[in-house]
Amino acid sequence: MGFGWVNKDDSSTNLNISFFGGTSLSPSSSKAEAYAILTLLLVVPPNFKAHSGDFYNDLADKEAGKGLNVPPITINPKFIPDVAMIPMWDCIGPIDRDIRKFCQNITDAVTFDSFTSNNNLQLLFKNHSTQAISWSYTKLWQHQNDTLDVCSSDKSKKHSFKMKSLNHILPCGDVLSAHYPSLYSQNLLPIKCPLCGRADDTNQHLGFCPDLIQLLTNVLLDAKALISKRVTTELNTFYTNSTLTRDLDASPLFSPVVDATHLVYLIIHNVVPQSLVDLIHSHTRKTSHSTSIVMDVMKLIHLQFLLMFGNITRNP
Ligand SMILES: [Zn+2]
Image (tube, rainbow, N blue to C red):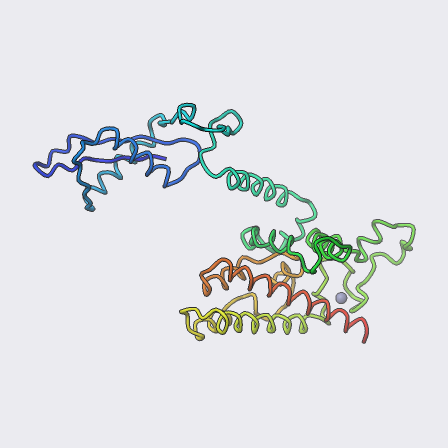
């Protein structure tokens, strides 16, 4: 990033002192500002008075622009006194920001790459773009402990269900017949959905059976009511009920379910839609509140979804 500063001379319009430079590695506006202050302190006279003004800000911005095209200024950390260690990244340069966050960004990028190139997830991307998915909230939801246990078989089963559902490998007819070919007569393949008997029994068909579509739309209405209740009564935001109701009604997430292009497809496969996060966060403006509500909505939809299947299979 580039940075720059100019000297405002009150006695004349002659701007005879200005400076520009560039920084390397982790891009950050705070870092560029710190470098500007550091270089300024090296030349500033003792009775220096700070000034502000759009004209001089614009001149400083122009200087910062020039800084993009010059070799970066680097600080040699070896000369910082009492440093216990200097973390380096791949022999390129020192890590000059929070190491935990630096590593988090890198692992997030690797995870994102492995997710988007995962063959099983291509079924997810068939109808929904990668931008429609909130990757950070999906990670939180996948890691969320839905039991009170620190470690238990129940917890493992629930975690495994989420992973299998995301990867489209729940034991539906297509997966079972592929894994155990000798158990199924080739004449009866592909196995049909036990509810409608018409579509193939696949992970993609889960929840989108013609017999379930209306129930699925009702589940979303319950989720909509939960968001409305949590945002208006519990969080006391400065937004009015009418803006929340308007936004909920306009959201495609709560429109009637027709086919797998509906965003509920992502939720069924344990993926958090970005539009759900945006909708809630625009009214709470606080990440901890948004996270709590998003997790509760995901939980409600999944509980209702499982109950819906239970009722259908008990009362065919
Ligand atoms: Zn069906």
